[in-house]
Image (cartoon, rainbow, N blue to C red; front, side, top):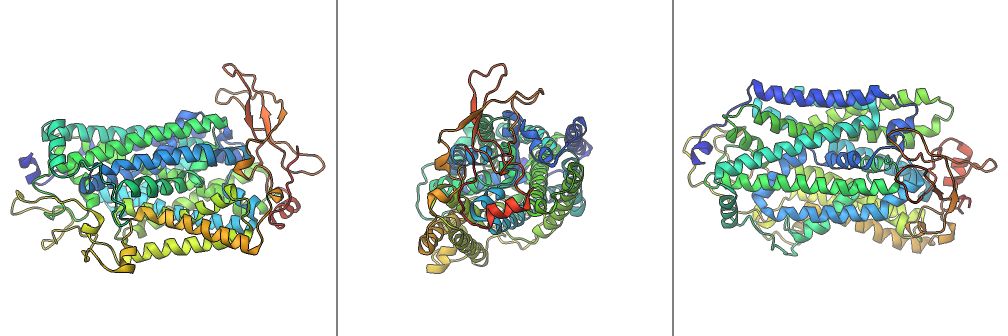
Length: 639
């Protein structure tokens, strides 16, 4: 172990590039096959797959989307520095999956909307829809930029491959199959990519464990190094990772990603039935546990392997995010192809996330911003516009990725901070809309603005005044047996022994500076709480909305009301058991009440209850004005 870690890691060889290129070609082939097998006949089918996707691939796609190269780079590094307590993140993810499946999913699914911001329009008016759309587009562009930058960093540091070539290749491949195939291409390529991602992790921690001396030796070294630390229940919010920050703060961050984020909601509303959508979320949770668990295990094995010579403190690498590429090139120096598998796993996660983001941003732009102006445009032209938007956002993501290299954050903190800052306030508005009937339009706007200000203040303050490693809870590492001369990976000869990305500050910095030292996982929870508190106060101060004035189907409390039954014919096709039907009242053209669709398919023992989707929100300008300009008007839903 010491001999291997003492010398310079090898670089990529032809076999590694072959494995990497094979992954890229297979991903592109799957995406193009889905695109060419059956072309979309409408914009709705392009964005939702005809609402006929099975649960398992959708669940794996949900998992792959936010488990990108951010996980491949960030989680092992964090687990190595902070210990196995990072696995409490899985608890936060589990809480999120339950809340999403039983609180948010039923509302979105039964309304049959394509964009989550259509809900904001129906509940709070057109202005809130536009504000939500703009916030989503900003957050997704920034998040996707970091996700593209992460594997580009690996490729550049590990192989010397040009950063710009890496960024452009990522953007080109994702944009190509996403533009041609829509959500179906995104989902099925995600399935392949999550398998590649897990394969890379498994290969790394198995072989690394063998080199250390077996699982018992890894656990002994980790225990002696304080890495087996599940008993950390410290309530200090400055602790970067503790039981409370990962379970409570982490749950809120993940809820903003899964509960109301367009990229995720768009996938689970593409399922055949509401029950299938819930199963997709639970499949996603299993995948999340496997990915986070295997990534954290890689971090512990990495710590055990470098127990006598930490690459970061010894100056061999310049950032914690480079732990994994350095480790992989080190242990697989005599096994060509395996470093390529690691790179392929990182790149797979990136492809899945970028393609999902591009498709989601195109859907939001089409449904929320352009649809009111495309009333008389044919479906064929709408599909062309949707594909053009996908191409445009692909270029935008590449641009933001280039700018992401200027940030000093680690990739994991950077991505979660962005989601917390921008998506946290949006989560608060959806909670007000679905669960607090008294919320009115001024309350929702005031809450959104205050939540965004709070989260932005925390993010900027924590960047300008970062906490010390001791405050955050970084565990000790060692350099006692490092050789005197080392060839470093992107580091200077006089590099400090501490992490270069976080300058040291006094442990107790005073009141406001201590507040800035709060774990980044709490940023989203602070923003969401601010939105709810301010929204409720302003709503009651300006005249609370009466529950009877809110359209039925917009409050979670109304979901169990008796529904009018309607029998429909089963839809033909191998992928789908039922087609969500569109009903229009000839006299009023208003949204219909929930209906129960009886399915005459094999295996169905009882009819499942659903709501009729609202597909044509923007089709009639007069109806749109009637629904939105009146604020919280009386329900147009017909029984």
